[in-house]
Image 1 (cartoon, one colour):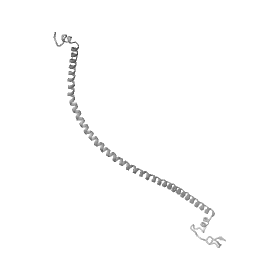
Image 2 (cartoon, helix red, strand yellow):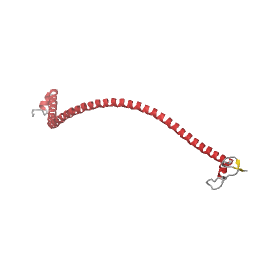
Image 3 (cartoon, rainbow, N blue to C red):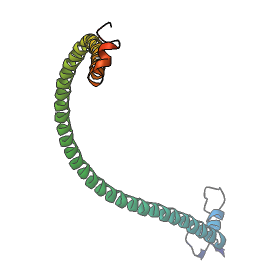
Image 4 (tube, rainbow, N blue to C red):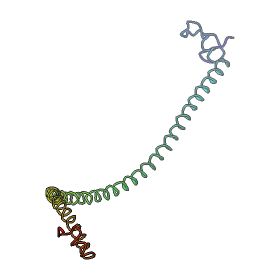
Length: 174
């Protein structure tokens, strides 16, 4: 008796035609132990590769999650730093306003000092013009002091030697 591939039992052989045109050979090949083992091994290998890929993706998601948690902490510290920077900038703005007022006062003071310097420059011009007259007066004074020194010397000589002064080349010709 021949195996009946349609009913699965034993009985009169009936021919079935499959896509290969043969009478049931393909059915026997697919159900053979080696083919089922190879297919099972292929499915296991594909599932193992799929599992390995999914595990790698999950590990990358875990790393990405850690990075995002760290980034969140960095954002928190950055917000804190920016708040401190804002306070510092407000204080700096106040200091700049005070410095601006001080610069305006300094500018006014420099303007007054400039006006005073103009007055000093005018006074120096007058002093320079008067220096010529003062120099001439000093020369006259110097000449007068020279004559005065000569007169004092002659008077001292006259008091110390009155006779020689009168008869020895003094005011009298004899």
